[in-house]
Image (cartoon, rainbow, N blue to C red; front, side):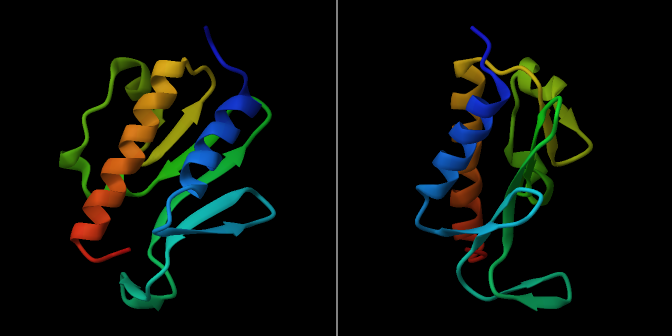
Amino acid sequence: MLLDLATIKEHIKDYLSQKSELQQIEKTTGVEFTGKIPAMQGKQKVDGFYFASIIEKPKDVRFYFFPIYTHANEFQLSEELQKQLKGKSCFHLKKCSKETLNEISRLIDKGISLYKKDQLI
């Protein structure tokens, strides 16, 4: 069974919101999640290292997931999720099964673990 865009967005947002290591920042375009400790992001010191964003578009939900960019070799994606990856870190989620949403939840957990290990969050 494929899920609608609102369900996809809410699942990812709710899952990220439950993570105590992350802070949620509401933007006019969507929702951003960062770490809570000051960190260097490139040459700039930020209040929290960027982790992910969710932006709902008319035809898809954009899930920007930075750990898959910073730790690319650590992630293996299913064929279904790989097809929805545009560029290095942005998923254009048009159709998702419950299994795909569960895979996204596992990616988030792994990203948090990697960032904690590197003291980014």
